[in-house]
Length: 76
Image (cartoon, rainbow, N blue to C red; front, side):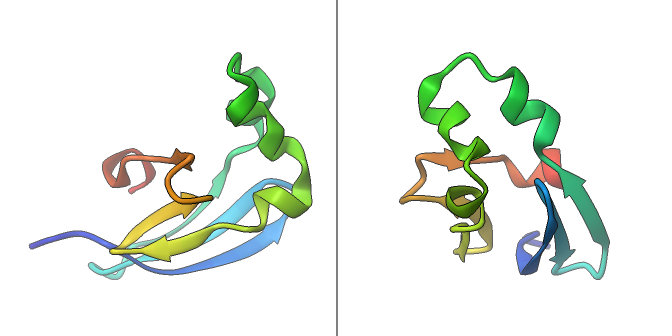
């Protein structure tokens, strides 16, 4: 089975609720990751408007043409 993200819904602050193709649903808080990031390309997503600009492409959650993305197994 190929696992993918079917739906992503912004829940406030730095939280996104994800629904996976196997039916698992989780709310992930990206806040600590972003606050502790050393790379300025990552840290800029502390801007909530920019953070909310994610998309789902090919079953992955991405920002700005893969500028920021997470392995699906880390999210699942």
